[in-house]
Length: 206
Length: 206
Image (cartoon, rainbow over all chains, first blue to last red):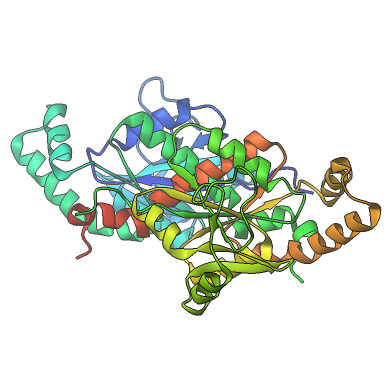
């Protein structure tokens, strides 16, 4: 007998600079949820102080490729010679425990996840305006104008992909955006196709 | 130019005795919304102190039937010789102003509304268990055992219709149920098919 209702896979995504990470952190600080953050798997070496199973799951290149072969990633990518991916089994374990598993991920990765986990809840974080995104990228101050322009161009290509998501949450203010995501999680649990199984005996379809 | 985003039609429904009215009142007491309650139209005579356009829209039988003929009701029914209905134009006016219009209505009426307003948000209020509903009907103490049994029988017939709704909200505790409905309203506004029009220029589909 299952004690907990299965949790939801919550995919928080959107263009670079939109504030995904800040919104996700604010979300975790809110009360009244059972969220866990999905831990990525990587082939890169652990840095000083990094703990396996906490910061990342550290695996060898062979292990990672074996997992790719067995379709054990919700998404993966290679950056500068190292693999990074979201291990499907680890996510499933948490969902079965009734946790909401949060992925914070780039647009391309999110669309990969959508194919493997169509029952996930896909949230596109949008800036209030294009200008706001541009200002945010400028304010970071860590990149040269050329890089900033590249990021804006990428964002322009990603904006039209918003229609592939279930929800669009505008990051006008971080706490507003986090509140909206929590509302989405609550609403998703109340959706008839999910809730009806919880009350199957009572609400049984004729 | 429209200044406000169009509001949502929120249909709160469920079996008799489930606490629809109490949940609806608790919902209106919450902060952070722009809800209005839909005012019904009726052919019955106003009672002492009742105000036209506030308690009901009072109309003649001819007017009501003319409106039926012109498909101007989201739903209507006749009770003991009087008509009662939800006037479509009044609801639309409020929606255009950006208000969320709340209907609190029986299951049969809600299913009528669903046909006329498929973009409404249909919420089935369920008791935590059948026994809880039975106890609630008993506690009311206004009806004889025979009437209570009739209501339970009707509820049993209505439970399987829950699958025709968008959401199922269990009235375990009134404030919980009201909170969940508010979360649903917020989530519905963030749904991609609604939000994408708000940010059309930015998120424009290619």
